[in-house]
Figure 1 (cartoon, helix red, strand yellow):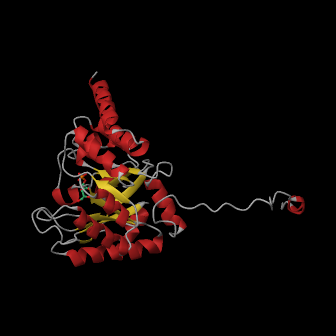
Figure 2 (cartoon, helix red, strand yellow):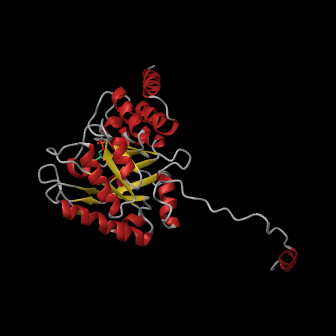
Figure 3 (cartoon, helix red, strand yellow):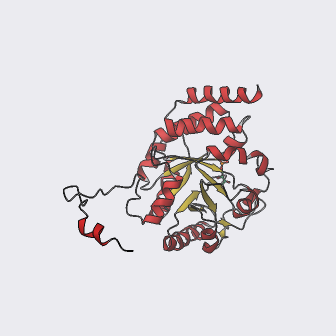
Length: 295
Ligand code: R5P
């Protein structure tokens, strides 16, 4: 029965308390719609404003990469420590249990292999499948300066348009060809193009000089790509420098899953990203956790 008395007598309007209008915590994202923001808030931790993405999508162009031969055995134990898993739909459906409740960033570009020209990608996943898989963002490779530069940019803008229709953000992944200069000028160019054309956040490599200018010139969040495996201490230092210089987190693969102890490494990366831990202390943490595993 309808509560007519409750309606008549209701007094708790707090007419003297203005309704709160919260700004959204993420750089450049305040004008997005609710669904987009909600998805981004599942990728980026609203407390730290940062994310630890675990990238395990390498197989989409290079097959069973070292450390990813058995994702069920080697990667699933790391997932409780990742804010987000970045992967393909094939691995998601075949290996990741649907009870996994953290966010998913789905690799949606593809169509090439290491045996041919990598920049010749297309969109390789229908938006309906991204919706079915309940993903929080879609990742598209963008090859600025690459042979198929224009096509890869258009792949990204198409995903931005389709994703916007359904509230799914697009992550632009800046890919650097072997012969390209990896300097601040190049990364400012690449990341800015992606953001100007609508990417909701951008993944790019760390560079020793001028990374802060890359972050400053990009109006949306940047996540640092891990790149080739380095000694753990160096990878932690790189992640530390990146977030201190303006990155909103990391999207690391090989430097985590190819570490001597991947479970220890991802926790050390978390400390640097979410707790501003120094690289030295994070490396101590890495060694402590690694030794506990052995003991
Ligand atoms: C970029 O090309 C792909 O997304 C990679 O598979 C992945 O993101 C690379 O991660 P990392 O360089 O940290 O191994």
